[in-house]
Structures are given as structure tokens and as C-alpha cells.
Length: 611
Ligand code: M6R
Picture 1 (cartoon, helix red, strand yellow):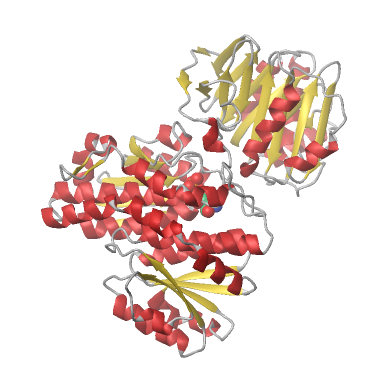
Picture 2: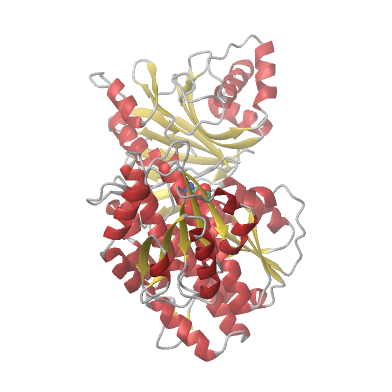
């Protein structure tokens, strides 16, 4: 949530920052801004996407070897020029960018108002900045010292980067609960919310930890904790290529990422699924096998699409491992007083590894002795570092705000994990295990086949793009896919959609059905096939329009449905890996047909680092 970029070194800062902001725009695009320091400290900001800022600065001489930039997802204060970052302190000496929320900002603001401060925005950021500057002036101390003192009083999550008019070669940064990466170049440093703005300049990076403060100059990076003790930076090598964060000839990141799925699922299985030996190798699982096998209960915590992957996992672990599973919205779990027992295992699922609710939820569970296992995409992310063990999904950077390839990679990891545990526990026999392994191994090729012909999905998207509402229905493993289909459509097209278990529909949502309502049935062949056929009949009897996703070779449902999408046949355990792809494509093509920005849907951001 919000993207930050900063630079100090020998280059012109503005082009580096602008390019970085474009890469981070997926984190928020309500407004953007830069602060540059040459002879003067100058701040430029604009409501809207980064392109609006860029246009407003055409023709300006923006000389500076140091600068900070920000792309905002609004929390405190509406999207506007005045609420855009960077903010300037009342003294005019400091400019600051911030990602996160200062929870006690109202109290700090009252204190500053009493001292006569006047605020020019509605943001918590301007309050924190003036709080820091006030400490600096009153204590006659350095900005670094003022930050240290201020942060001891701050409640909330933050990454801040400060540019000080009196120190044109120094940036001060600090973090708690939001990500910050520092790229180390030759005589230069790059700061960003993730590695994408840094990758083309250097592969050497340092991830800043919570409660750490960095003093950054062209040739120097000093890390300290809030107690002013120096910490040795841990320099890591980035395993990321520039091509992975570019569109590569596709119109949008979302469609590129949908089409990457044969490879991303393959990459996820590679080195883990050993078909010939009939086994799965997962280091994170093996290291904690005893605890996982003896788990009294698995609690899955996640948000959004990752929560839907968790729901599929509930079916997987209960069926294949006979372990009871609860799937929790991280945001609810963290504020409840959940009963967590020593025998519980928590699985945290997150693409970004930065989702604030998920992070806090696992920290709470950890305090109570649970084993935390992360299923994560971003290497070195906050949740990865807070977990005891885990498995990466290896889907590569996901830039489209709507999650696609990360979801299928999560399913691949969770399916492997469930099969492996089931085999170890003996809750699935060798024949079934072998069958599932080969079904899983065939998925990348089946996804490739499915993506070979998407014309029908485009046609259906066009036909229903003016609908006001959609209903998505599925049973068993395909129920979470129905939820995911509805979420994708809402996010990308702004069309109201609801996902429901197909059988539950008659307890309420059926009242919505009329001859205008498209109802998407995810009805691939499984144990409930006859049942879902009855549900389709119930919709047809009320003149609803049925769009059915069915297995190749199905001769029955195509006779009843208005429109049909075929997917390759597969065992129901792995079917969601296939049936979700038409959901992604349907949402994408409807969004494009409606002329919407599918990569950056309104009001959303990729990493939700605020609660
Ligand atoms: O990074 P995470 O997987 O933790 O993110 C969770 C949700 O914010 C995310 O899945 C969100 O729902 C996506 N926009 C869905 O497309």
C-alpha cells in the first residue's frame, strides 16, 4: 500500500525516481509526488496516476542528485494534490514520504496544534513529520536522533524516508511493519518498497527490519536500531530479472500473468514433484514433518484471493490428510481472541508476504506457541521472515493488481503439501497418491492447452459485459473457485458479483435470478456432478442465463447452458487449477471491453500493508 522510492548518488535523481514510481504504481495510484534537493528543497505532487505527475513536470529543470518519491493509496484524507506525498515540515527543512498508518496521529496532532502548528493536509504523515521536526528543533538534535525519539512514541506501521534541506547528501529511513529495500550501487543507493525499481541498477540489496533506522549517503549505509546501536547490514543478492517485471508484448500485466501460468505452475512443481520416484520433496515441510503430522488442527490465515486458496486447501487437507482445518480471514482472526493450542499449525498464505492483517495474525499465533508455515511468493518478505518454515510459490513478480498466477501457484504448493502429508500419514494409499501426483504433473500442459483457445471466453465476455450483476456457483473444490471468479469480476469490471456454494443458492440468492442475470456455474466433473446439474436446472427454470465451465467430453451440461467453456478433464483435487483460469479470463475481457484499467482497478492496491 503506497510505493516509495528514493535515490542518493551521482545520477540525476528524478528519472530514477519517476521510473521507480511507475514500477510501484500497482501499490497505489491515488496521487504521486517527488521532492528534490538542489539549491532549494522542491516538492512536486499531483492527484492521479504517476503519468499525471510526469505531465505536470514536463519542461521543468529538475536537477538533483538526491530525492524521494511516493505513489499513494489513500488512507487519511481523500486523493488530492494537498494530501499527496512528499509532505514538507512547517519549518520547510524536511520533506518526508510515508507508507503505513500512524494510529495515534490524532493525539500527536492535538499536541502540535496546541503549539501553534498549522496543517495543510489531512494526512497522518504530515503530523508525524512535524512531530519529528518539532523534536529536532526543541532538542537541538540531528534528524536521525529526532526520528529515534519520535518513533518511540508512534503507534502504527510505517516506512518513512526523510530528505533534510541542510544535509543534501543524506537520506534517513526507518521501518516498522511496512517493507523497505535498499539497493547498493557504486557510490549510490536506491530505496524502494520492493526490488522492482532497483533491479536494473544493482542486484545487491539490504532488507531493512522492523525498528531499524538507516542513514544513507552515496558511499555509506549505516543501520541502527532505535536504541542507537549499530547493526551490520546483511547484503543479499536479488534473484530477479528485469524481463519479469515488464509487459513483454502483452497489453496488460494481468493478461501476461494469466498466460504465464503454464510456466509458473511448472516452476512451482519443478524440483519438488518427482513423478518417477513417486514422491514430493519440500524442504520446509520435511524439516517440520513431525509437528505437521501430529497437528491437531491447521488454521489457515489469509486475505482476498489468498484466502480463497486457503479454502481449497481446507478441502485438500481434510480429505487427503484427515486433519481438521479452519480458514480464517486474517483481519478477523487477529482481533478475535482465538483459541490456539500448542498442537496447532498456522498456514499463512500471501502473494506479497506483506499483508498487514496476515502478518499480525501470525505474530499473535506465534506468541501462543503455534508453528507458522508460510506459503508465499515474495522471497524475503515480512511474512517469510516471521514464519518458522514455508514454501515459496515461485510465480515471479505479480504486478497486475488482480491476483492470477499467484493463486494457481498457491494451489500447486498447497496440493503438493497435502499429498505429501497424506502419504506420510498413510491417510491416502499409494495408488491414490501416484494418481494425484501424475494429475498434478499434467496441470502445466493442460493449462497451456486451455490457453490455446480463448475465443469462446472473449465472445462470452462481450455478450455479458453490460450485465449489472453476476452470480458464481460451485460445489466442493469448485466452491472457492466461484468465490474467486466473483472477486476477479468485481475488482476488474466493477460489476457486482457474488460467489456462493451452488446448493446454498436456494436459501436466498435465487431471489436475484431473472432473465437478465448471468449465472456462472463451475461444473467440472467431480463427485457432485449430478447435484450441480440439478442446480443448473433450478436456475434455468427461473430463466437465468447459465454460463457453464465444464470438463471436456461433458455431453449433458452443454445441452442446458446458454454458454459453455470447456476445460481439460482432471481429478477434482487438482481441478481448481484449471477451472479458475476461465474466471480470470472472463473478468479480464469484460474489464477490457468496458475500457477499464485492468492492471490498476480503482480504489485497490497490490500490497495491503495497512489494516
Ligand atoms: O499479498 P496477499 O496475497 O496477502 O494479498 C491478499 C489480498 O489483498 C489479495 O489477494 C487481493 O484480494 C487481490 N487484489 C485479489 O486479486
